[in-house]
Amino acid sequence: MSQTHEEGRVGPAVLDIGPGAGGLLIRASQDMRDQEIEVISVSQPERRTHVGVLERTNGNVSGWVAVFSGLQPDEYTVCGGVPPRTGNVTVRAAEVTELDWT
Image (cartoon, rainbow, N blue to C red; front, side, top):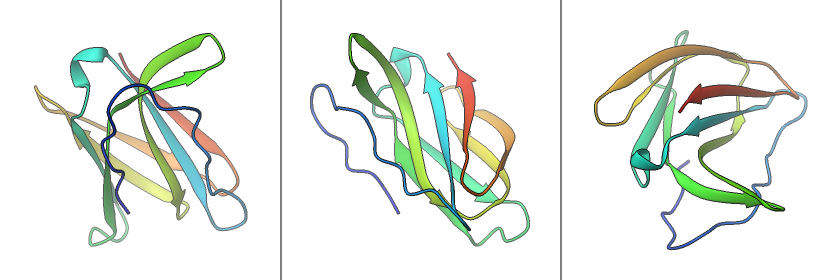
């Protein structure tokens, strides 16, 4: 699963979450625009995916975010950006976990 980098603003994201799937929203600063962020399952390191940091709008509010949808519930290592950043998050079924990298 990857996200295509798009020019300009992108609207609200639709997340595939529910039984057996959660989401992850990483708030980023504008200097991370178009950089890739990767999530790696701690229990199954071969299960990994990446998306780009894009500007998203929701009403009058906009911000730079990386949106991961349809992640299996698990502990994940998150890495990416320049300079490189890392962290760990827990994704739960039917929930959206948020991480602030601003």
